[in-house]
Amino acid sequence: MTHEQEREGHDPEAIEELVRDVESLGAADRWDEAYERLREALREEGEDATVLCWLGVAAERLGREGEAYEYYRRSLDTHPTDPFLLASAGSGLASFDDPDAEGALRLAAITAPDFAFGRMSYGSYLAREGLMDESLRELEAARALTPEDPIVRLELGIALLLANRGTDALAELEEALSHGEEHSWIRGLYGLALSEVGRGEAAAEELYRASLEREGDVELHLASALASAAQGWEDESWNALARAEQAAEPEDRTVIGEVEEHLNLGADAAEAFLRGDLGPTLLRERLLQRP
Image: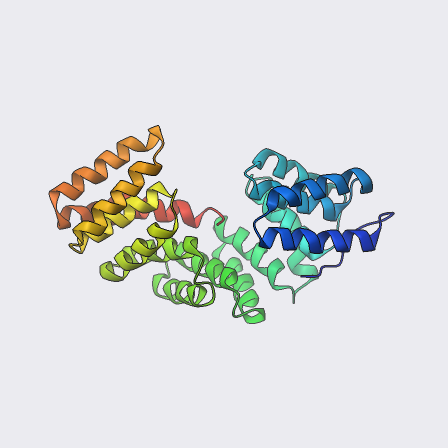
């Protein structure tokens, strides 16, 4: 991916090469190496918007959320105009509820209407702020620009779910999976959405697959256990519960106990707990967070 960079007094060729290297390392999930390369470049280049923004991305991938916020904040403080930097740093700030996120994301969408990532980033922000008409307009524009991008289809599906348009949302999530089969987070969300609309067997199938793929996702394992139990799939149900127990933290024990209780009560109880309690709560939480 190539992006116009923001750098006055910096070495454009060196930063372009750095971005290529960082993208390559990121694609191989070697974010620790990318982070160190970027830190070295920051010492050499100073407050460069591109380096700072990519440092935010790398820090976020490494779970260093506080650092990620500071790097995104510093990137925007250099007043970039590049839409990629505005959308990336703006999205980073949005996850921390920084009020400056909206301006950066809006500027990215307005100044580069043919840049799908910018339109998608702004639309995703608007959806999570409850501005559904504006959100859908931006996300549908992004879909028109890149119809095979699974993340664009995912974000449009999320917005449609937040707008209570379940049937349309499921179509977008199905399309997202058709272009991103390996994306287990999308599959888990799709399974929860299927459960929400009462498609129990399909929900159980998708949640089961996602549970196998997402080893540390305790809540998804529990949803899978309940969905499988509701279909009478006892082995799959208890195996999912075992995965949840293996990955659990102390604070997860209460809900694990509740799920186990409902599994013991039978298929109807498991379905009622999934559709009336755990499923809607988990779906809502995931709609409001970034994958």
